Length: 454
Ligand SMILES: NC(=O)c1ccc[n+]([C@@H]2O[C@H](COP(=O)([O-])OP(=O)(O)OC[C@H]3O[C@@H](n4cnc5c(N)ncnc54)[C@H](O)[C@@H]3O)[C@@H](O)[C@H]2O)c1
View (cartoon, protein in one colour):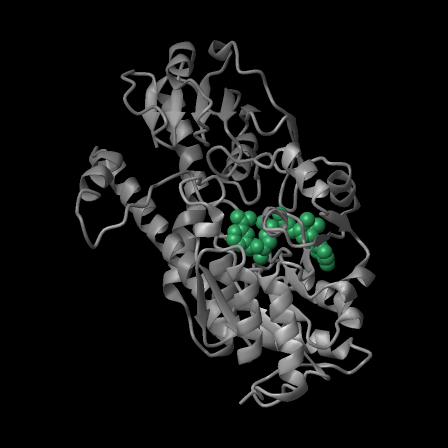
């Protein structure tokens, strides 16, 4: 049990006091879609916040009052700077922080395995600067065990003062720092729930880590949900995302069947959603995208193998969801065929390349696979997306395309709706286009022979 008297309690009490007074210094590491909004939330609540990022362009942008995330206006960055927020790529400043929160990427590598290099590099970089009593929280989505098996060993190995992570059986405040895991549960583009209303799950390595992390997050979130360990918190996040991934796969499979049976899956979902219990609607689409749902489940299936366990639901869902972009291309081919045209040589306009509606995020977007596959089969492809003037080179694609103007739609043999941005005037699009293939039901309510749902 942790001691509650003596020097430990003084260190803890003083840190808790600073947190309560909102004077504790907060460092956010990784200023992307997760880290930057989090830094702004702490800043808004009056905490002194320092942002850390290895990308010098992001650091420069923030320190010059610019934003690189569409939904964060530059006025918000300027307001935060006026209240003391600043960014740096120098880890030496980590030593001045009371709490460091890590929000770095956790992608899959080319073999579809977890790539924890960003977490390892971050831990290596901050390790020399960690001080006794400091709180370190990992927010990046990852498999159960990462905090204790990966993060802590690197932090301990790189610490010249030989500090250790506080554990239930070893929590001397002079020789330990505090570690917790708390997953980010945000849903980008969903403005129906304010970020501070999303309960924050927290699992500390020892009770003091849970208490301090709970106090930190309690200052900006309306509810914190303590759990007994970092592994429970890590697994909670994966359960949430696997639940979505599997249900989306189920509805994608049923959509394929409904298309064959000439039943409108959207009408079916609407009707089923009237059930007041036991049913939550999920919607079909052209495939999964984003940094979370197509990636996170495979963190667990990889880890499960260590326990001689095969996560069949995850694999099956992955199989169905990853086939969806190819089904969309097949649907375009069939629709053109009905117009006595082959895909090879046809002009196709892809509408929307973001991975979902109204966001400026291209990561793992099914549109990229669709464009590449259309090109591979000989189509002459253009795209339009209000959020992306250009699509260049990414981890898994190299398109080098410029956004086409949204005009003269009659020049295309087919307009393919991949992302249903709300800015689009779908009625006008259908009027002008020769043929519309709709993978999102964006044209609902519009009666036209030109529309093909897929
Ligand atoms: N984007 C989301 O909606 C979302 C939602 C829930 C959870 N998550 C999880 O949150 C984590 C971060 O995701 P994101 O979308 O913010 O990623 P992101 O790519 O937008 O941002 C990550 C940032 O970390 C920086 N970075 C990388 N290595 C670094 C290092 N060693 N030191 C400092 N900075 C470093 C990058 O330059 C980048 O700015 C991931 O694990 C992701 O799975 C994301």
